[in-house]
Amino acid sequence: MNKCVAEEKRLEQGLTPFNAWALAFGCTIGWAAFVMPGTLFLKQAGPLGSMIAIQIGLFALLLISFCYSYMLNKFPFGSGGYAYIQKAFGRGVGFICSWFLGLCYLCLIPLNATALGTMGRVLFNGKFQFGFHYTFAGYEIYMGELILAITPLVLLALLGAVKVNVIGSIQTVFAVVLLAGVMVMVLSALFQPRSLTGNLYPMFQTDGNLPLQIIAVALTAPQFFMGFHTMPQFAEERKFSPDWGKVITDTSLICSAFVYIALVFLAASVPVGYLDWRGYIYDLPHKRGITSMPTLFASVHLLGDAGLWVWGITVTSALLTCIIGFYVAASRLMYSMARNNMLPGWFAKLNRNNVPFHATLFCMAVSILAALMGRNMLNWTFDMASLGGVVCMACTCLAARKFALEEGRKDIIILGTLGFLLSAVMTFFLLIPIPALGCSIAAKSYICLILWSALGAFFFLSRRHKLNTVEPGCQNERESSS
Image (tube, rainbow, N blue to C red; front, side, top):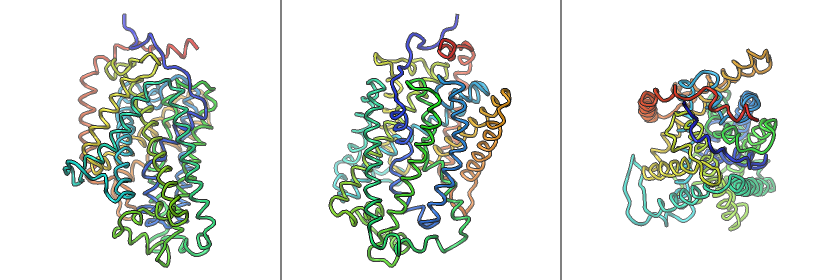
């Protein structure tokens, strides 16, 4: 008789709505939030154009979140997008989506951890560039910076062994510090005499087609809102009604949009030594240290030495929330896959605190290995992660539409169709290079995509015979008993 993997233990319900919000919000704000405003958004669409684009991206994802909320209420004990897709389209499609969603979560852990080394280069003029060093994929890697990256990877992985309510509480503290730090910086800019009168002009990027510029930034929404769909991954560990799911997801998205808009405003509001933000932003390739990071430069100019500390604490909190959030999301995804024999049963084993610590240790090992390869390689996989997240969104919307058709829910049928179309458009522009938009994945990312797909195909074929041994009601035992 076939049995569920790890059926003797279950994840513990310990997350409050605030904890769940902190995990979802923390996954959307990482290193990119403090870099992209100066290096991408302002160059592409200008201050107001970028703010409009961020709101367009927010609106699109708020529509898609209806599908996640519907599925969460329908399957309150499923482990996120994988469970939804598997229930709607079978284990084959479920495996494909979860394979790429796992990459989405996994690559963002070392990407944010290695950003601590980049912070060291900016804040301390490369003082952590000591010890042995080597070059991988064109990026110089130093022992000192590796220590900065690996230390939080290990410590936060060990944190993953404690009860989920403790993890949620620590994540909540970091998320609140992150949000408070951004508010301090943007409020200081609002009281700058020229912030709202002269420095932000021109409001749009005057070179090129304005609508295309706004669309180009809006199409990067899967990248700068990456992680908003992590909330369903820890659905089994919530101790609140699934009705809260929509509120938590939407609130995390709105807070994330606020942070991005605030940082765009901050980056453009203090172009010291230049007539306007354009002169400063276009001169960034020649800058070094603090002046090379617009959000940091603005914070220091506005708050003095205190600005350095505010920015540093805020960014560190953002990096830690990302690492913790994606550790939780990735480990729960692996746990869910292992319960369906898509991964070895080792990933489904729970420790005495009823958390999948084995899966967390695996995430740590992969993240350390990725950190050893440097940020250039991680940036290529980040493009793939964006694609994986969008594909999972598309499939989740289709799954919601399928179940809504069976139930006659016209609202979800419409939203599921619309969400799928929006996800399909984002996927198209990520895959197809269009020079006028410049939002497609990098050329080298295609090579990584092919390799990851081939690895996934091999892994699926090697375990295909085990997929059919799982009893149909295996993952639903808790639903039926609740």
